[in-house]
Image (cartoon, rainbow, N blue to C red; front, side):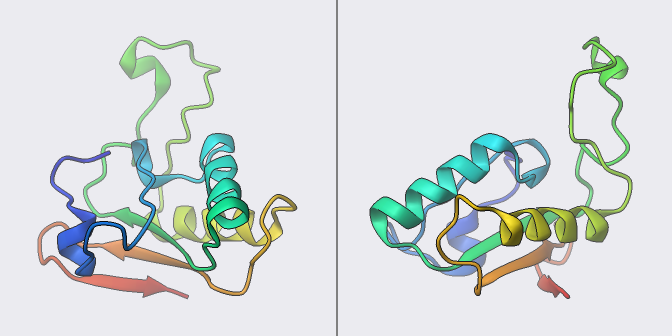
Length: 119
């Protein structure tokens, strides 16, 4: 969702190379999982990259700070790598997805422009 991040530039993608889903925090939500399942089942996608970034506004955010109900499932997180690992794990467990072998997680550093894989 962050306007500072251009996935095509970061990963050297041309139009049509990838399905890019964007949301606050780069989190795997029910809708993201559904969209990935459609991408795999209808369009043959096999690889999935979960990418979150440094200096993310979702890190440490509380729903109440936004004037939202405090019980709203915002998905805010404290630790970036833990969040990436949780999203990757969710996809690897997903019964909706056909392909689980090539699901990987990454962190994009907005200051250096570097991408590193989270093991």
